[in-house]
Length: 280
Length: 280
Image 1 (cartoon, rainbow over the protein chains, first blue to last red):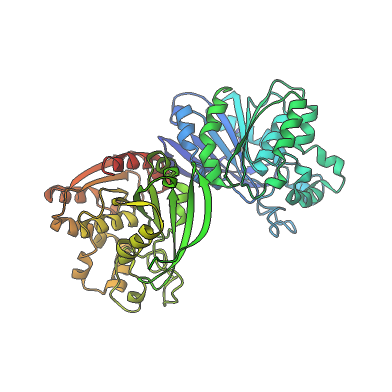
Image 2: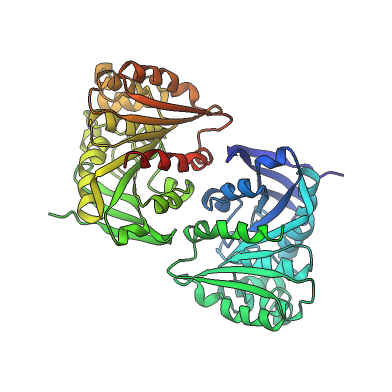
């Protein structure tokens, strides 16, 4: 059965279309939105697919409005899917009280604790449910899929790649949360979603997961601004060292003077598309 | 005396800086913000300047977040100034009630009617006060200045150019309001700002002003989406004909399938920088 998706908006952009769809999610038990850019090439043939996972407080709009990625998606002929970052409007206590818990803060994990476990299953949504919806409805090449993430979404992209060897051809991140257990804003949400036992948190920590990665060769690109206001929460250097020990290839670019926001992302997004084009 | 400006934000972007400043405006009798992109070249030498005037409901943020212009400002070495679109917080009755009157709807005119005439003088702000502030504080080449505008800002850019022959080397617009007196959302604000006598409105109508233009040769670029939801309010073809009669050079590009928004602007912004580079 093909999952029903509803087109919410569509604007021509770089000769393709930037669209937003909504659908009822089974994993998340609520209505969800995702954005999708269809390059002009998608009118005639199937295209490689890039997922872009956004950061805390974002929804499906931030990246598509601010990063300028459509220019390069059109140039390379890639479909780009930008999911929302959490379930919304589930009526859970505390769902909309804090920027780092609940709406906008799915953290790309599968919650195990009530009441969050009824809805907060963003990991399964991103890696299982959404890919089927995309494949059923859009002209993708199903074995040419890569993933990009920013901040919390960088953490998400790394989780998705390490936990699903071979699923993504390449991974790139902007200012990723590399060691989720040392990221202070994550701790409160992890305790609520996963319970206080830190052993369970390790399953959702890129720094821990890379130690046991033994899938196909994986190449990771990390861009990190030196003036990032959250840099002390991110641990890119330690993560790069952990990757080296696990023989996972990492390119870490420290970008002098750049901060954590979308002016940084927009500056380097072209290089991320170029990076993924080596693998797609 | 150099006008005091206060830096509100600064982010590195394409090796230059996207900044926002605030200052007390004499013309508008309130605190105002403007955005300015300083390309990397501005660290070493003076640079040409482009003003970008935004549309109804916008402030200084929309263009700098959504258009992707910094890439080309950095490439060409242009400083880009993006003013807000109206006074704010003046405490006028009706100031914040309608999207087409008051805040976000300065219409780039000088109001003559009370109470608006104490604050709503965006034309004088854009053409007289702000240029002095920019010249006093930033490394511009003062005789290399061009102007871009979108929608209401396209109307504004055309007003500024026709009323100040020679002040701007070139003008380009996205989906401009070419005949302000036929634009329904403008009518209500014109009546309030300028009084009901339509003769006074003609002074703020590009279609009327072009008829009497006799300044130096002026080249205007217009990009217009064919799926623009406001196209019946804009009159680009009629305006182009009026320009031809006044021997003002116009390039009108009808862009198949594009709408009125920033996905349209971002698609063609590169061509606008290329256009202006012929004159700057």
